[in-house]
Image (cartoon, rainbow, N blue to C red; front, side, top):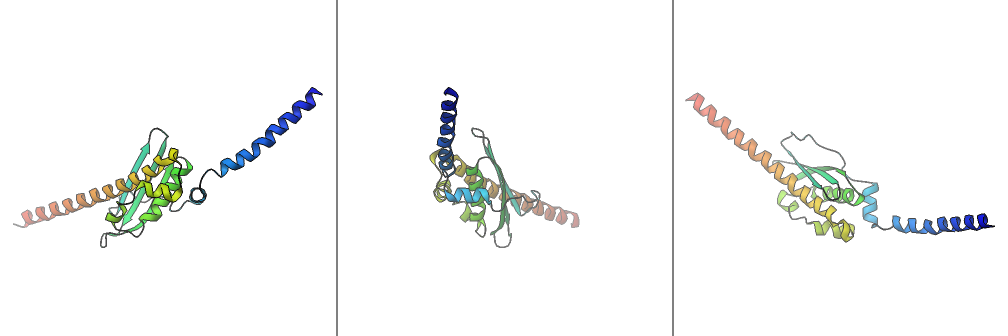
Length: 170
């Protein structure tokens, strides 16, 4: 009789937990789940390509690491493509995915105005996951900074070459 009662108790405990698991699955907004299940623009570009800017950021507190890359059309200054690789939670992956979608087709100055609060609001992130949207904003800024540094280095290299050619021809 004690065994039968124990089995019933254990079965009730399992049955009671199943709805909780279903509720936990619904804890994230459907946009987070969508971007987690079907992430957009996953991949990477050649980091040595002068038209590619790479932003690599991380949050030591939670272990999330995000690499976001942008490919820029030098003539127009527009971002023609973007991709990411993220090691982290579903919110970090979703934030990266949204960030790559939002930067495509925009000018460099425009993407710098994308704020983490906009990403968090779009994904309906809970307060404990706001650091994920902050990482996405930081990754965008780091990618733009990297692209601009490459462009400046390339411009300086071209100017130096031109100067050397002038001296050699004189």
